[in-house]
Structure formats: structure tokens, C-alpha cells
Image 1 (tube, rainbow, N blue to C red):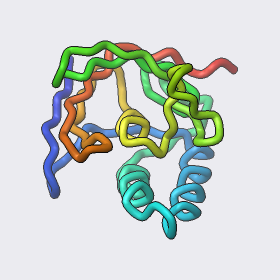
Image 2 (image 1 turned 120 degrees about the horizontal axis):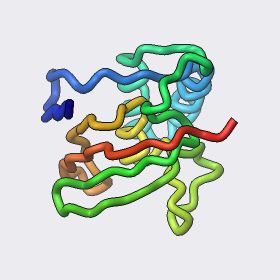
Image 3 (image 1 turned 90 degrees about the vertical axis):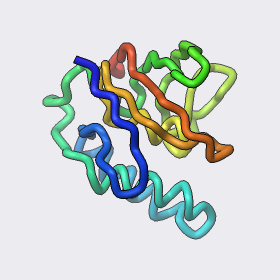
Image 4 (image 1 turned 180 degrees about the vertical axis):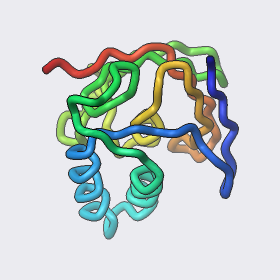
Length: 139
């Protein structure tokens, strides 16, 4: 069942699930970048604050975790993209490795296959992202 949530300030978003150890590391990352990039930090912190957490062994395979490969559709233009969600130091857009600190990266974190979320892009235009498939990280 597809879960499409059109989100505006104060409204609910699809539930997200994050690996507990990744959540801790992502909190530290968000706090570290807050002085330089307060907007990016605020977006990530807001997602982390609303997330449920679980141990890595309990993470369902259809949920986006760090290093997952994610196939999604940008419903605004119909484009199908496959990216890997990575830590900032591993980001390489030419290799389809998207940083967790990018708007798309933050939007994908913790989402399930079949979920959709309305999320602002770098230009602050809302994009409806629909998760099609997830390949969990190896290991």
C-alpha cells in the first residue's frame, strides 16, 4: 500500500525507521555542521527527532539506511533515479552517491519502499519523491 503524504509545516510525514547507531552518528554530524549550515542541520535534526530507532540486526530490508541503494521517482518530472545514500565524505553525484546532508538524502533516510514524501530541493521547490525499491547496504 502506497503511503503518500503531502507535507506542510506542522503536518505529519510518513513514519521513518533508523538504525540506532546511525542515528547517534547522524545527530553528531548535524550538531557539528550547525554553525556553518544551520538549515541543513535543522532539516536533519527534525527527521532524527521524529524517527523510531532499531538495532542494525532488526532493520527491515525495505527501509532506507545509510549506504542503501534507493530507486525513487521524482513525481514532479517523472524521473526515475537510483542513488546510494552516503556520509558526506563519500558523496559523489557523478557516481550517484548522495550525501545525507543533501535535501534528497535527508528526505530518503528511514523511508520504506512505497512511501512518498514532499520535500524541498536546493532551490526550495517542493518535490514529491516516491520510493520504488531499496537495496540494503552489504554486510
